[in-house]
Image (cartoon, rainbow, N blue to C red; front, side, top):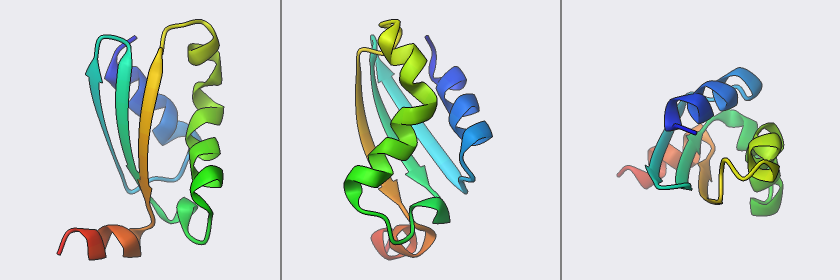
Length: 80
């Protein structure tokens, strides 16, 4: 599995402004930015990311994921 595939899947399934993925072996860190996360709890945000990737996770192509998710407003505040 490579990070380009993960980016492609998440861009296709979620309406994201930006997505950043880093990888170390089968461990991935995902930072996703989009209004799809606006008003959602952290758990619901994680589910949004996990759902499109569940097949890769169950097939052990992805071993571990660290997720950071932001609405556009949160991302703008975080960057200051």
